[in-house]
Amino acid sequence: MLKVPDALALAAMRHVSATLGRRVGGSTGTNFVGVLHAARRMREAGQHGSIVTILCDSGERYAHSYYAPEWYAANGIDTEAADATIAAAVAGAAGIEGLEPLGEA
Image (cartoon, rainbow, N blue to C red; front, side):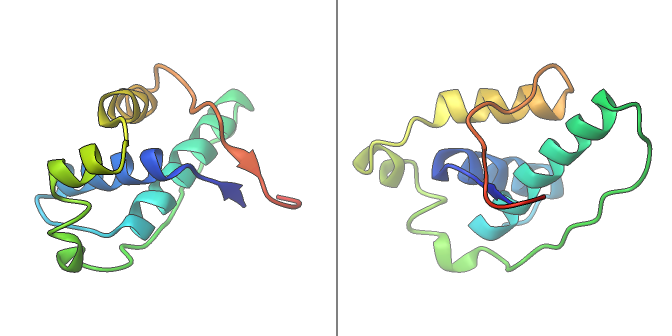
């Protein structure tokens, strides 16, 4: 398990939503950060395989928060840096820094 910063989880949520063309919630974003991290570790170890995750909810209840740019500004969340980090990880150009392991993997 990993401790995922809110800004990265929400950036991943926005990325998944944009890719799928439908809203997802923050839990899905957190899962997707884990997927990106696992994929990077597998690639670095020369491993191949599949990674499966779930879409946790529709994200509709976050329309006035996670999907509202003014909410990020009011809460001091830097979306540009987090979005760039997720985009680089999706492209395979970089890992995601700052993830803390929680317990044994």
